[in-house]
Image 1 (tube, rainbow, N blue to C red):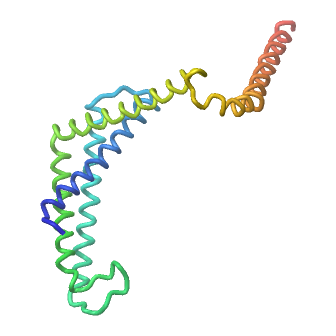
Image 2 (cartoon, rainbow, N blue to C red):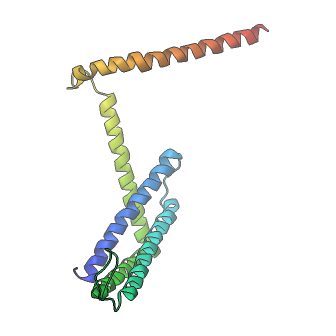
Image 3 (tube, one colour):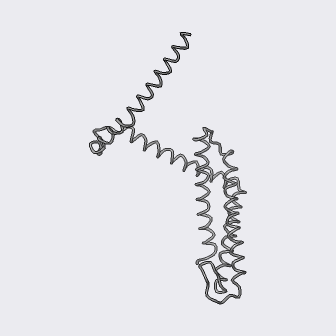
Length: 192
């Protein structure tokens, strides 16, 4: 393995990407699914909690590496499994412990820094907007497609006609029956 600082920087980068993804998903759910308003100050606490949760995961991993190191001390036999550490693994487990602690410390520092939290929320908002924009573009391309520019028009025509016959027309007929029944019921009520 390389330097501890390099491993910590990589771990922080990965954890930050995971936090950004979680915050992005939270923004999408709150603003689109729940019809809420985007507000950095409202999303900020969620972003902060996400960073803290990731720091806690790193601390738990550090504690595990420390326990594994203690367990490995003085064992010189062959391991029984991948995670059955031996004395020769002590140095590696010590490095892991330091790396996990370093990542956790930096994540906690970011969680306590309002500017870092705000930056995370803004990056997540940009990512959420990118998802929404891509989805709209895809839908507009499909819904706005014309027969003369669709290379698959002839190939897919049979499937579209079958869907029309088997799905759309029966659905339309059922809807029409439902409306007619409602009108008939209304007429009976008015007649009484």
